[in-house]
Image (cartoon, rainbow, N blue to C red; front, side, top):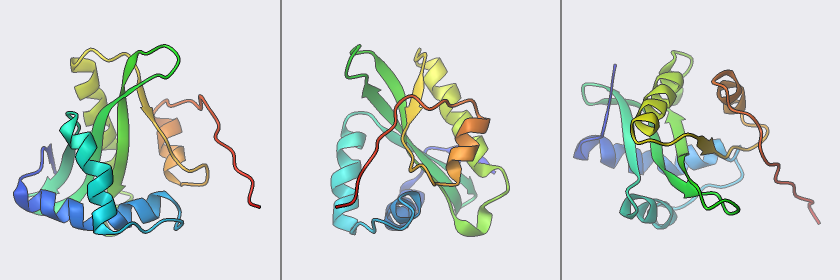
Length: 145
């Protein structure tokens, strides 16, 4: 398994599977269209964000979308993980952890002192994030009316 910036073939696969990644990440609440994915992802890529793909040859195993965000109170820029996804048939083999560690290495090399992400509270990936050392910083709450 290799973690690398995706070539055109892998990128096409990532973008075609992104609606499923969002669906899984939102615990089935949202299934965006390909057009919505483009509207969400393109601005991140335009601002220097990029994907890293876990692959064996041309077989995509999963990916992570990296970028930055600015703390609204301190104005400090942080590394930000916008998306982490491993194809269902490859889950449970450590690829998510490997992708996250590659992200940490990148952010450290770029001089960032903090990495942030957002996740649904009931997403099983929260356990992975906690095991990697992430701590809950803010809580977003909702009330269905």
